[in-house]
Image 1: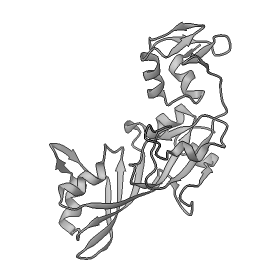
Image 2: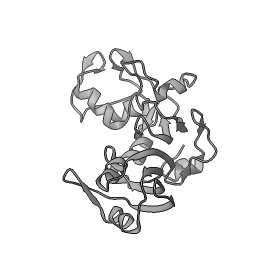
Image 3: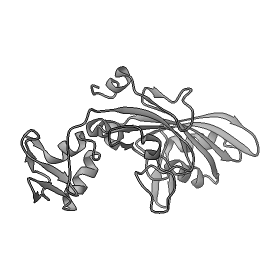
Length: 236
């Protein structure tokens, strides 16, 4: 017997957290009956599980590295008809979703998978997986400001800090930096630099843990290697 949310996540319907939300929203049925209790266990071999009356069946787990272009949403659909990450995976048989997010106007490395356990290991804030970004901002960022970013700056009463920050290039008009975050809150990077009086003009994620963006072109994806998957504590 397995927890219902784990079965949904492994089948590729959603991450573990989203699977829990589906259950609480009363969209999941087991053998024709609505289930809205998170502690429910099922036998995947015997019980019939559906989401919105669509049967759930186990899928082979897939794991992709994707170079998200700017102005693409990290969602499965958009009411306004804007381009989404899943638009780039229409030829993938499995139902996939993104691990974590990148802002609409940010680009770079993103994981796309149907493996809920993998998504939890990589994306949950408690995992502490380092994520590295190349960031461009207006104005010159000085040595004192770099130290403030490491110690933490306050933005609307919230303390935001970088796990690591390195200046790559600077002029009076603009600066380019490498910023490392563990976890990361909503608009974390933009808000940190805003607190210092700098506008962020570009954000590119170049690494998640041991996985590097490398030469992968915008809008293209590749499968993660066995070694890359195992670097996050799991198996392919």
